[in-house]
Length: 418
Image (cartoon, helix red, strand yellow):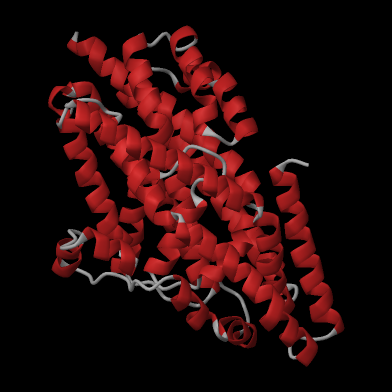
């Protein structure tokens, strides 16, 4: 049975089992409370801790390789700079669309106070065990604390924003130094990335059990209230992805790329289908390169550069998904996020979109990290994992379409500039 099918089974077992326990025993039944305390919550906590265990090496290796993949930064030229600027701009737009819809539609609200109190009982303590870092301060303190005085201490303390900065800075240095020893170091970082991704694959293989445990805990405490919240969340994510896919990308290829949107979407249809089926930007890269050259007729050297970097660094759908998920869970748990904290989420999501692996479920560790940074109980990630396969397929389609749109935009500039 494929992983997404097993994850759906775990989702169904957790939800149906929790609903049955809620109806038959009641949320306050001592037997149910004992089962939650001694079985369901520990299993869910171990699953989350396994994800957090791999966040530090994943972010470091992915961001370093993302920077070094650009080549020699001194010779990067206008193609790389325009690709980077486009990636940051469009990723920022994607996250803003998601955050705006969550703030307007409020999909995480509507839960009764009694249900929320049961849900939050002990959640803060459980989250503090998983994530020790507090949200950074706002204003000038936020800017200065991004730069770590000691990167190892930042990693140990869970200050992953500072850890991201160090990884980016380290990647720039590694790209600038072209010596045999630095190439060996880059290969070592690539080996760290490969090992970390393999371990994440092993952890995700046990996700059905973790999902079942986390969702059993939620539904046993809340009953049917949780079902409506989940449907609202999926609807907002899909709506945000659709707006970015068909509005933002259409405007980008028309105004910046000089191509008719209908021509563009007809040309990339094959890549979109492959992305939706595999839920992997990396797996779709060969198809994307093919349609860029054969259907969109883009210059091969530009298409290869932009699409190869974009399969890792231009993850608009992932950034949008992460932003929507964090704010939804904040509303779900009744955690008010100030504007400064939402801007922090925006910043991390853009970096997370650059550093997230282009493989199925690659964004889950980053989502868990952001939840901890802004003080939202990380147990809620179990609610997301149950429907993540479908949403992963949708956001990967957006990611791949965005890579091809970026190739169209950058190619036009290259033609104009000779």
